[in-house]
Image (cartoon, rainbow, N blue to C red; front, side, top):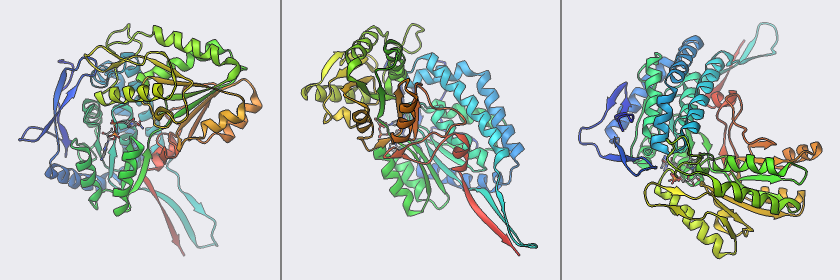
Length: 476
Ligand code: NAD
């Protein structure tokens, strides 16, 4: 328990806690133990954060690319040096296996290094004008940012917002998830150590709706970046609309995986099953609907069932564990509801379908097959270790199913037919399409969705541009 740090907020560079503030108990999802008591912001705290963000922006917007890059690279170095410590914090408060947590931390190092490089690549352009006249297009930082990050990748989703905002020359008030606050605080610590001025990045926690209403009602905030559910995203867009605050929305998905009969079925089944169980399925780009060509359906279904049934589920700290607990009790309730509903509508439960024990939030890796399209889980994001496996006659039927839902975040396809690969890339409606791969995210690659999965991108040059506005200067 001593590995878990004391909890507080960071406002104007100061650690803020106590003082009669309400608190929230942070739980280790593997044991149910309380890790710490998190102070929740008062409106006075939020107002001080806003004042500091305004001051921070006024100064940081004029910082040089070299200064920004030095801070970002310095933070990256410190994270790399303390990678094990940060990974253990992630596992303690979120539940994923230590190996996955280390991967999350390593990804953040790459992200910060990429953002550091982007500070020098913020090119504008000069327009062609008659002799003696000049017109240039410039990119300027948008202003103070509100960044709301979720609990499933508490380090990475927060870093995407904070790192990109700093690279662009913005200040940011980060509200990490109250369920995983130490990861957000770790980010603040390394940035401070790397020389970031106190009021450029701050961390607050609170009752989410109170915090977001207060921050988005302020004239100080000029940009909102949110990662979370589509329902909350729509609510926040409405709040942001009152002040015409720009938004980046990374919302829910329901990732289709199209598996064609020209692949090595055994190898692909193993790859996509491991992908499914990553972070117990609590990944916005998780594969969820396995859309399998009928001639290989039985082989695929059986193969996935065998692997899932043998998966070792346990505390993410245990090196033997292949899948950790769900992050909170809400996910357990959702899994129970999804499985009961699917069963009632005629789906087969090939393996799993039950909670494991009554300590912590463990759920069995689960294969549901022949799942009718009207089952709740075929329409709502499962966000848990449920694989939905169904058989389809041909490519057209498979693409129709892939595009059936309003979501469009990530999609995957497995086929060795090169012409079909191109058709799929063209026809699948998603922000990210992976063909014969299980991962599409990378520091230099824009990450984001279409349709109800949101708008805008994080990561890549687009991820930094998201914190900038365009100005045209014309001189005669
Ligand atoms: P939720 O919809 O209540 O919350 C989703 C996230 O938004 C959480 O991180 C929460 O802290 C935050 N949030 C909620 N209300 C907010 C508000 N008014 N202002 C600011 N932030 C707010 O549900 P939940 O139980 O935490 O998660 C359930 C669903 O959320 C999942 O099924 C999944 O669809 C989605 N989710 C998506 C991601 C993602 O990476 N896109 C991450 C976490 C959760």
